[in-house]
Length: 226
Image (tube, rainbow, N blue to C red; front, side):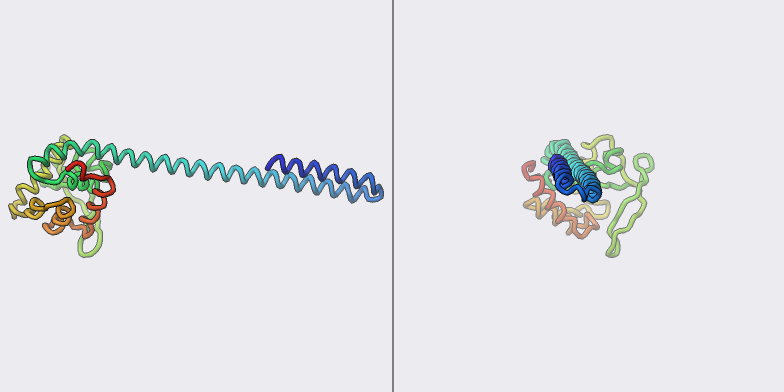
């Protein structure tokens, strides 16, 4: 495009000189015409320069967005690769689907990026009351038909393995008020039914919790860890 504009300006300039030679009585008009054409050519060049810069900036933005997307995906895969063997080892002895545990960890900790997970190895938002092994943090819960932000105390773990072990034992031992709280989770015959049983047994307040787990299991092919 640059050379096309330059060629156009050169051609018009030579044409103007030819007209000037043929019509000497119109030299003043031709002079102004030449100036106009030169100015027009400069405008075209400047506009083309802005166009190129805009296209370059768009290309850079697209590449940066793609790199950021790939980086986030890799972080998620790294998290799954870290959690999966631990979930397999622990859940095998309790008859719990590793795919569901991995999906829960990914969903509840934002693939290990939440403050609770990154600083305190708490992948599942497990709460507690003992001041010696808990931290007070903000959390969102679905109450009375809407999401609200509250403050609560959450368990602090020394490792991811300790967090997953505690999580699995919750299903095995139940709660302090009901030892069979998660009987349907333990009796589930597929990862999808186990995810739905978590809602049925009152594990989460999110009404779409089971569906989110099922989608994560499918998206990352987590059943290969069962």
